[in-house]
Length: 375
Picture 1 (tube, rainbow, N blue to C red):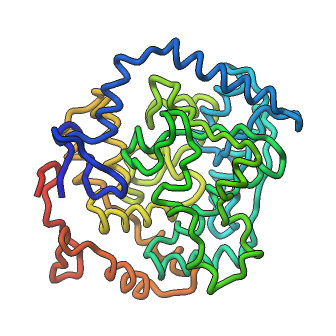
Picture 2 (picture 1 turned 90 degrees about the horizontal axis):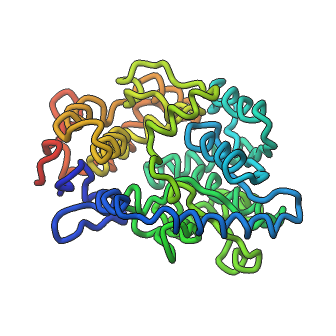
């Protein structure tokens, strides 16, 4: 496993490629921001706004997918207050057993600020069945739910004939998943190629349900998107200060309710992500066991680039928090999909990267690597 020489990005991230100097794409992109002609980007975003307003037969200029979290809250306010557009917010809702009251309150907060919002609620029993299938097929319960999360917004955009979709960060530039890179930094029409969507393949789901029962899990084809003149645009591309901290501060000042659990319970010392449900924490733990990095690695990489912390300080945070998850969330997830905690760990243990971890005598996975040091 190799680490970026500037931050703590690893070469185990799907879709990433370091340059010849051992620097990750996200660090190179951040460095390039110093020489960006922001007037040119302003002109580019103005053209996109014009496109949206010229295609508002529904009365809405654009769509923004929201969870009520920090990123979607900041995007919604920017589009309404700065770009002077009339956005329709689209929220994919979780079943009652999964959604938190905090998540419900945060979406309500956005509506109370004057935004129109449509909630999409996939059938709960199908949702549960596909989540279980995802866990045992990929050791990633999010595989099916994220198919729905990413697919529902362009599906609704096509149905409502609103061709402009604002998305948040460009994962190619800001995380290093080069698969999603489009024609330029703002072009999001290659989202279908990101690791989460896997090209939109749903064949592994069809043993459980019929295709006509899971339309919201099926990403629109390229032809469907072309016929609808659909345009997905990364809004973060136009901001100098798109980051976890900046977006979190902005949203919290406008009523965002953050988490108050102990950081070791959720692997997150900031408490400003995954606000609408609790099980992402255990999926981040699994990601850590598969790839050697988890959620806190992504956070500190931003802070290193923004010179908020040193690389050594970041290493200490990663060693302390990456891969941590409360047993409470593992138990509640296991109960939801109808398995025991022992069944949960039996499946997870099959997917641990044995090149990166050893199992000790107490049944605990111990990293073979030292954070920040290439092996």
